[in-house]
Image (cartoon, rainbow, N blue to C red; front, side, top):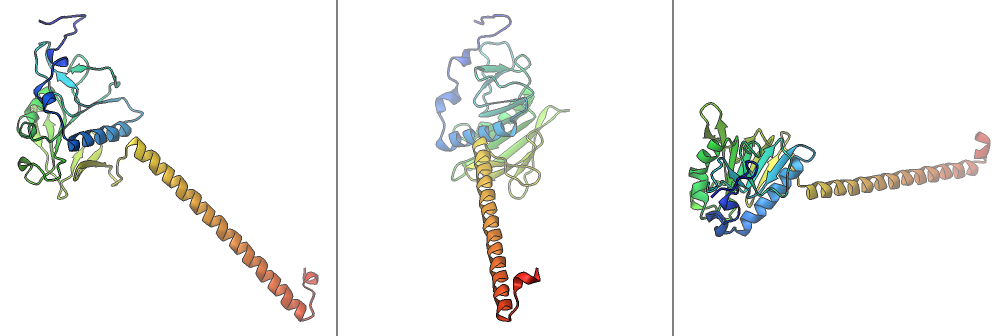
Length: 251
């Protein structure tokens, strides 16, 4: 029975495992979720945006409602709360603008056939599903990335058409999603890879090292040119002296 505290609902599946919870996850699955969360967190750093992994989403006050728990959910315009246990769309905040599901043998069929309609009903604007396995699952048909965009008028998900390289554009992420074997990479309009915080720090450190090395090379080159100029002047002075001319008198 529901226990209401200031219109709060204690949802059964916030303290009990769902079928998906009991299935566990592969190393491919876990690694990709961690990577994407890191990339998205850094992409939206400094902006109001909450990024959650495996958070239960509800749409009613029914305490027995079975949740949708995308592997990753991006909710723009709200503050990330690390203590959030679940999310009730319309009460906790809006539906996620973007969700990701990562393939597993047990859920992949539902991810591709049932989830688009469920996420459309919840109000999700973009839904992406990705197969990171070394050998894509049979349902993937040698394709890794799938995407749907919400048709606001009909409230249905429309599948996106990938480019020849299998990539898809996400307006909400302002990024190209590009399949890269076990990972899906994000790139900006100019083809620059979206980085994680650690990758960005490493890139800045590498650039600082390269700049320091370039400046050191420039200083060495300038010192070498100065030495060459001195040697040239000394050689000219010696030549003048050999001709009986005092070079100091020429100044």
